[in-house]
Every structure is written in C-alpha cells, then in structure tokens.
Image (tube, rainbow, N blue to C red):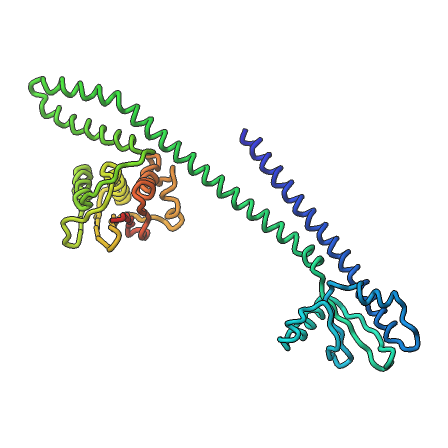
Length: 383
C-alpha cells in the first residue's frame, strides 16, 4: 500500500516536471522565433528608411507602408556616428518629454539586448547610422510565461503541502484524543472494582492503614483516568492560584524522590498568582516536568521552580541540575516517541505541550539547557 502511494506521488511529480519543462522549452523556442521575426521587421524598416531618404529614387508605396504599419510595437532608437539620438519609435512619449534620462537609459538597455543594425545615410555617404531596438510586449510575455507558470506551480505545491500538513495534524490530534479516551474508558472498569475491594478491606479489623494507602492509589488512578478523559474535549478553564497548584505537585513528587533531591518554589514574595487553567491537566504538565527533572538528575541534585507574574502573562520555570539536553535533541524533546530513557514511551512532554498550547493557549518550551549543568523548561500562561 505504501509502495503504491509512493509510486503514485513519484509519477505525479514526474508528470508535473515534464509538463513544466516542456512549457519552458517550447516558450524558449517561440521566443527565439519571435525575436528573429522582429529583427527582420527592423531590417525591413531600415531598408524602407533608406529607400525614402534616397532623393534620386522615388520612394515606393511599399516603403511608405512598411514605415507606417510594419512596426507598431517594437521599441527602437536611431543614433548617428557620435551616438547622438536623432529618432525613436514606440516609446513613452510623455517620459521622453519630461525625463531627460529616459532615452539614454533605454538606449543602454537596447545595446545590451541586440546587436545594432547599421546603414549609410544616402544623403551623406560618410555618415553611418545605427539602429538599436528592444523587445515587443508579446516577446516579453512569452519570455516571462515560464516564470509565471513556475510561480503558479510552486504556489500550488505550497498550498497542497499546507493542506496535507494541516490534515495530518488534525488526524494526529484525533488519534491522540481517541487513544486517551479509550485509555480512560478501559481504566474505568478496574477502578470501580478496586473501589469495591477497598471498601471490603476497610471493614476488616487491622487493615485500616492498608486500606487508606490503597484509597490514595485508587484516587490517583481516578485522577489519571480523568486527565485522559479530558484529552480531545474542550476543557473548562477556571481562575486558580498557580502557586498552590505548583506547590501541591511539588509535595506529591517530593514524597516519591530521595532525600538527595532538594525542591524550592520561589514566587518572589507573592502568595497568590491567578491564571485560568484546567487544574487536572495543568497538574499533569507540572508533574511531567518534575518527573523529567528527577530522571535527568538520576537521584541527586536540585529542582528550582520560579513563578513570576508579568503584565499579561504568568511565567513558570522548572529548572534542574541534571545532565542537560544536547543541542541536536532540544528540537526533538516535544516530538511523540522521543526519549533518552530506557523505559517510557516518550509521550509526557509531547502531551504537556499540547495541553498548554492547545487547551490553555499558552507556551511550553526549553528555556535553556547545558550539558552537565541542567535544563530549564518554561510554561507561559495568559492571565
């Protein structure tokens, strides 16, 4: 199936290239043909001028007709031996009158385009005149047509790629949402069963402590299920105290880390910093960032969280003293499936970025990272 799709795309690309190449070659052929015909017209025009200028011979009607009708669109300039312009035709008469640099500029342009056509003035055999000419509007259109066509083809390809990328992102988002909702659905049945068993365990003397610990784990599983269930749906955002939310997650992660890891939360003296969030999803993001920090430090180090209120934003930095991220991996850390750990699916940071950027309209990015010194992630929320 993939091979057929690839061959179909390759064949279409080859056909498109063949069409554009054929158009370019044919346009060049037409341009050369028109250019040859235009030079013949100019040469005929010169012969007609010589015929009419010759006072010893009566000018023919053909010569007069050529002067009047044979060239109505090819711009040209006639100069004498001193390169002084004495005649021009098919040029902008208004600019000739108002712009003294117009004719000399056109003369320079025509000299670069074609070799001149020379003739001797019948009234003065010692005087040699030269005629320089440009290109007609038809010839210019033929020359520029392949470029216009290439531009249109390139624009079409860009629009197609954007459409395909948008569709793929939409499909990927639907797959993510479907997997998350299915996971939440699958967790529902065993959770209900576990809750029942915990209630039975509570009723048996001597198991109270075990039951309480199991209740904590069940509640944790319910929270995970709730988080997955919210993926793909438009979450309800509520104004919450970000400091409290972050501190609660720090307490949770601290219980599951060693004594060799220190945690600090710095809110610069503020007790309340408000921002609109969906609490379960936001907690998930902070949890993922803290867990990644722990993994990067391999059991010892410091995790420093700073929370700062700006005019229109709330900035949350999660910094660790771990091994850091290499430059080539910084651009990959948010891609699904990327992980440097032996275990894990590499989905935590990818999901976190989606939660912050798609559901909270904020930002999540690597603020800084240095090998052997640590990494700092920044979350930006609108307040």
